[in-house]
Amino acid sequence: MSATVKDVMTIRVVSINKDVSFKEIAANLRRYRVSAFPVIGDDRTVIGVVSESDLLTKEALEAGEGKEPRPISGRRHWKDRSKFGAITAADLMTSPAVTILPDEPVTHAARLMYTSKVKRLPVVDPGNHLVGIVSRVDVLTVYDRPDGDIRREIEDKVILEKCATDPGRFMVTVTNGIVTLEGHPETSSSGHQIAADTWHVEGVVAVRDRLAYSPGPAGRVGVLS
Image (cartoon, rainbow, N blue to C red):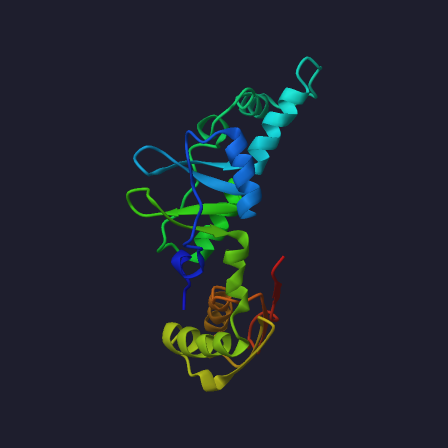
């Protein structure tokens, strides 16, 4: 099992046109109880994202006009200053938007959010048209997966199919997403491979490698930070 973005995304997305005013954006943020909107261009493609942070930046800059600003880095300074006097979504938005395709794995969405330092990703089709939105909360739903499903995938897909080993040689227990592997692998390398592949099973929070390696190093304990 490998969840994709389309499995967890929200398809009822409120977007705004690039010409929507600051006042309308603020009102719609309150109305829809969201923190950001994808911004759509004239050709209906996603051209940016405008968030409550963008609106607050503009307000902070204008409130401090004529005062000595706090020292900030050059890039951050010019990025923020560009919002001074902004009156439409096109002026305020962060562009280009960081987007993702619906068939991408959820793990890719998580990585993209982390590296891009964003809380949500507009989901687009190959033509860059909006089809949904995925948030941090959506991505974390993979950890709702039942322990029994995780255990069966490890036994059937990891141990039996991928590593071509008899699952009867092992005892796999899963509690709250924490996997404990016990048993006697045929070789030290196959045991380490099973433990490594278990980390990639959806819903796994941590892997406790208690396999009996003989000869070889003691088992390792892995914990997701």
